Length: 491
Image (cartoon, rainbow, N blue to C red; front, side):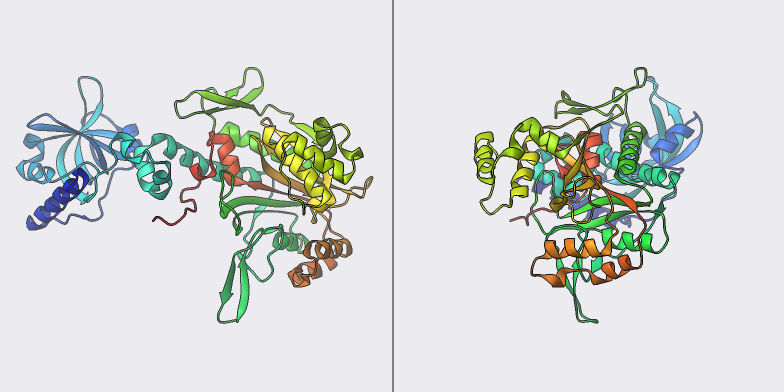
């Protein structure tokens, strides 16, 4: 029997011993005086408080014991001695292990080192842990184990827990910011008869009662625009989207988006709004060193596993804005003068892999993604993209080959696309037909019908929340910011 199996066997023996004593190893409700963080705020010598949490450290002093009790808000030391707790409590405590949950009642006092401590006079076991926790993280060195057993990652890795606490704060502050700007939060269908709003492979499902083939949404865009037709001027949704595509450092098949629409605005006003929002979020969750208020600068540092600075991203406003074609010309000044064949030759020279079946605009986009987007770390709004890339955006008035859009790039990846929205139902139908090719059943006729009733000019944007959290926390993989990322089945 290996060491871990021996430990599990011992814990099960203690579980049975508890039952023989008439104690439930998995406890019951326990009223506390608050979270551990709240208890530390209330702490005053002589006060009686009730606390509950998981045992994460135990120092055996013979007749007395010091225990660290933790919950998601912090740590509190408790002191257990037979003189105060009584012999029955000590007998119970001997059947308790690291990782178990206990509830205690005790009096506040300060140790000689000034550590706030509860002197226990009542103790209850609330839940027995039948498996030991990883010891100081050594048990979860395997990166995939951190994702597969996220609960252990959260218990043992303060850095990981801090990332998810920041994610929660970011979601809260997004709502506060958007509502402060007059946007209304709405909900739109996740099951859709026609998947639209993006070019992506959907997940398929079937509704038995209606006998319908349905899809998990790839984007909420077409429903949110219906609300503009219906008279809502400012709407947003924090939504889950699903795309049946690859998994990578930047992609998970289930992901979170903020999507919003603003009647009578254009992509320039939307860019201003997104720039303001991201800076607001960075300030709202910033830690010492992340910002430089004395100089008006705002910077985010990304660190490696040892805490060394790998990269500093400068969020200081205003952010750079540049046209798509001008950025391509920075890679090759003659790019748009080349023939199609010459562009493909240049890709080989530039080290950009392309597929022979790619259309000419897709070849250019591949160059953009590899030699502009992936090498851009400070914020950059890429504007005036080819219309083929964004079929739902308004055509540029001066050049009908372009659309009025931006793509916000930070940290080597797209964070947010934003458009002046196309509201001409005739042009929209033509664009969607071009995108669908021979698969005309992919047209969302209900959306086109809504447009024919009149949609005001509007600006809209999306923000990939997972990538935004990566940016603001310094996480290097999307799996580090999603509590339960999609993984291959364990073999």
